[in-house]
Image 1 (cartoon, rainbow, N blue to C red):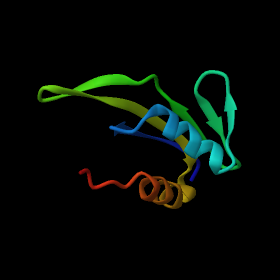
Image 2 (cartoon, rainbow, N blue to C red):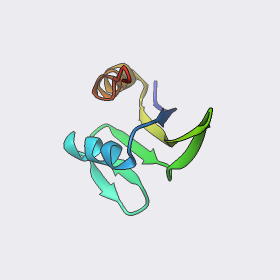
Image 3 (tube, rainbow, N blue to C red):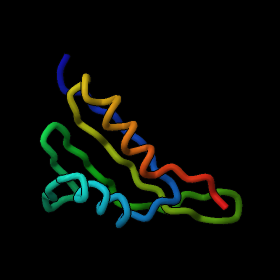
Length: 87
């Protein structure tokens, strides 16, 4: 196996909420939007405005670097935390 890189584009989530999540699961922040945990590394891009019809929603690219065997559990926990149905 080995280290793999996976990217997700998160729309409608405040950048701060993403930062707080990675800190809450034991991550440490490196100066340039990088977060490090015991078996993962995450890079949060700057937020940009993504047009959706006549509105603009915030979007952030979340790039994970993680052992391939650990990916399913890491992404499951991440998606569960940011699961939303709108409203």
